Image (tube, rainbow, N blue to C red; front, side, top):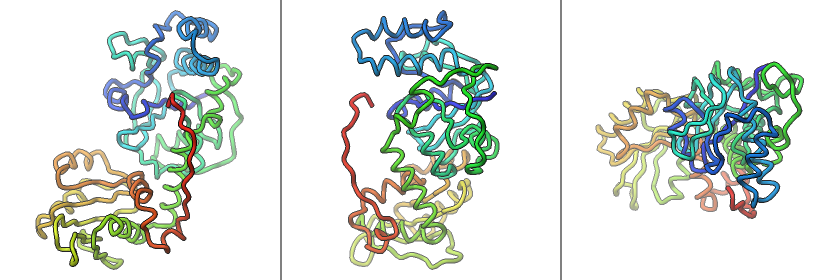
Length: 351
């Protein structure tokens, strides 16, 4: 039975690129030695207890569960998901080889499994809210199983779309061909939810539902005006490649002048990037902003590297960030449609 796993790549995404380049996933636990000779969870527990003897019981238990998942439970054919901090997208692939200890890698990327990454640019907006919540945990390694996660991740891997919740499958934890008992935190990631990410995903989903189409241009206009721009938003319909014209000063003509193209649908391709660049040159704009709610295709992302000094891209998560930093200055009508409140909580020093 195929299983699905999430392996995070560091708080700041420090392992994003090396995981993609080396077709692997894992890392962390720099102080833990090679676990190749460990053939059971008890073997891993002995190593971890010896190395982390001075740590809390909770940290040791979590480390054992996650390291045993890497060493003994993640098997070829399993689906692997890597939420990427650097691009705010999801990478999905299939495990091709089980645990290896890469002594030639940096200490932060030695405990790994091999992965055939088949999608490296899936936008979070393509995943429905309940599944996003299931994928959200502060753990480095865990097995999402609620909300029919495995079948939906299979569909996302194959087609790039989330079919939504369907009749749940029997809850079995796979280890090769044998079902095993769940392993505390690893198989109950909801007990270690990343509440900050969960809240962001919930806001992202709400904006995607309530500010679709031309409404998204209206929201971006309000955000830019809150940041001090004077904006002229084009009406619905053909816009010639420009949804919003913005600038500083009383007439909106002072530098930097800004042209904005807003796309609220699927992934944006390279022709849209070329179109915006061409309109900017024709109109003499200082800067460009491409709002790509569904993210960029790989060719579009490659093309953007040539325009990084003049054009910025806001994907769904970037729009959420912009809304949050300007929320108190947004019009009351938008605040009514998108009601938010700030909550303070203690930060985990181990995050």
